[in-house]
Amino acid sequence: PYSYAELLDRVSQKLKPKRFEHVQRVADTAEKLAQKYGADVTRARVAGIVHDYAKDLPDEAFKQVILSQQLDPALLGYNNGIWHGVVGTYFIQRDLQIYDPAILSAVGKHTIGAPKMSKLDQIIFIADFIEPGREFPGVDAARKAAETSLAAGVAFELAQTLNFLVSKKQKIYPKTIASYNAWVVHN
Ligand code: DGI
Ligand code: FE
Ligand code: FE
Ligand code: FE
Image 1 (cartoon, protein in one colour):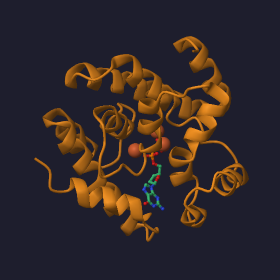
Image 2: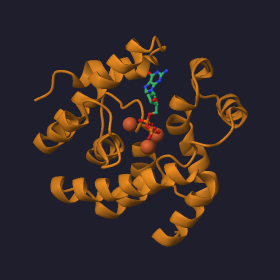
Image 3: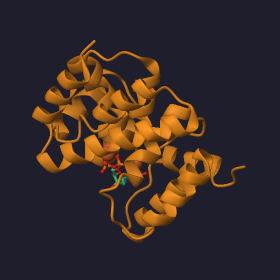
Image 4: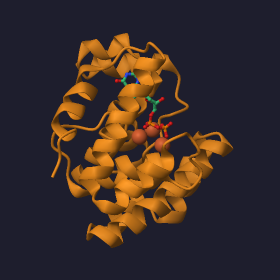
């Protein structure tokens, strides 16, 4: 496997500088959450480093993979916002030789969540949303929720994401709704 330094180097070559800075802050935030909540710190860092690896790939590349890998054809009705996570795992395996199912799961779910999420899945989902560079309204409440529990953090983020998408009249990918329904009432 690649070292952190090699992974960072490869990821930095694929992403615009602003995005690469976000990636490093997500990795740091994920590492802290893993420490706090007792998850695998190494996997948290690696997943943070690679989670947006596919963000700057062309739409055509995603469409080809959706067809050739026979992924959910409904994905074709969405865009990079959904594809870079759900389909991004394909490129992470191909280009970075990362095959750890726990890491691939966290990356694949980092944008839309899932009804069932491992601790690592929840950590990457949340770290992406609350890393210190995020400034949107509600981010402080999201950080507080994540301090309370991972489940509270996930539930808060899904509610806010759905609100945001509705306010922008964007289509909601059905799995995003399934995630919301599963997490909105949490313990
Ligand atoms: O990649 P990041 O910008 O760091 O963050 P992200 O991967 O969490 O989210 C990327 C975008 O995905 C964000 O603008 C919201 C959007 N998104 C999440 N769920 C859905 C969605 N877009 C649509 N159209 N439908 C969804 O269900
Ligand atoms: Fe992302
Ligand atoms: Fe996210
Ligand atoms: Fe991100």
